[in-house]
Image (cartoon, rainbow, N blue to C red; front, side, top):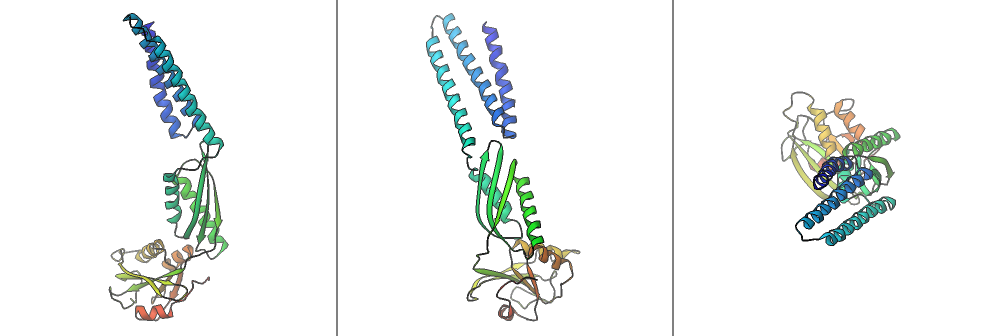
Amino acid sequence: MFALLLLTTAVPVVFSHFKLRAGRAGQSAALVADAREYRVHAFTTGLAIVGLASQWLEFPVDRVAAGLIVLVVLKTAWDLLADAMRVLLDASLDPSTLGAIRTVIEGDPMVTQLHWLTGRNAGRYRFLETGLSLRARSREQVEKALQRIEQAVREAVPHIERVVVQLESATSADIRYAFPLADSEGPISEHFGEAPYFVIVTLRREDRLLVERRVVANPYQSLERGKGIRVAEWLVGQKVDVVLSREHLHGRGPAHVFRDSGVELRLTEAENIEAAIKTAPSEATAG
């Protein structure tokens, strides 16, 4: 009997290990509950072994073992009940998961502002709702952006059942411009992709006061081919609203990147940053 009890303890422990790992990987509450049940079975069987051994050693502890078995069963029942109640009550997503989703959404080039984000669990399934502002200028751009965002969220977080996006009006008090520079102090470069530096200027919409000005080196200047497109993608990632260039880019690769991301591209004749800021549009316009 002692050998049989040892065998019936070892087998459930090994099986519960694999079942628990599969349940957590698949977000299956049923598999996790089964794995816990096997472990409780193994633990209670182990207490029975202790009771038999204590009888053999003439130091009986069977009543204590029985009491521990009752406590373990009650504890397991409470844990399973708590998990079931969380599913019934649509428990909110944990902060780390929401943080990962927020990073994915804010990383989309079309998103100008993420206003709010909520999520809930229902068993293994996750439901997500968010409100955000887009830089899109047409219905087609909005639809493509929403499809891209939903796909990115599903790839980043498993078991997303539904993503509901509510478009909000843009409330940003600032507008951000980008200019290519011939050197770190200006003037504005005649070239776009080959410019060694870019200045990113943030102005307050209301009174055009300077909020921030930073000069950054062009990370793609040394590329032999495709540098214009890569620079355009990089500027989109900087969340700029308007790009002013002395080089005519319309109809070329960078212009397509800006158009698809909702960034306005404008041709300027200004030779320095101050003049370009004075003639820069106060609002990004459609078209």
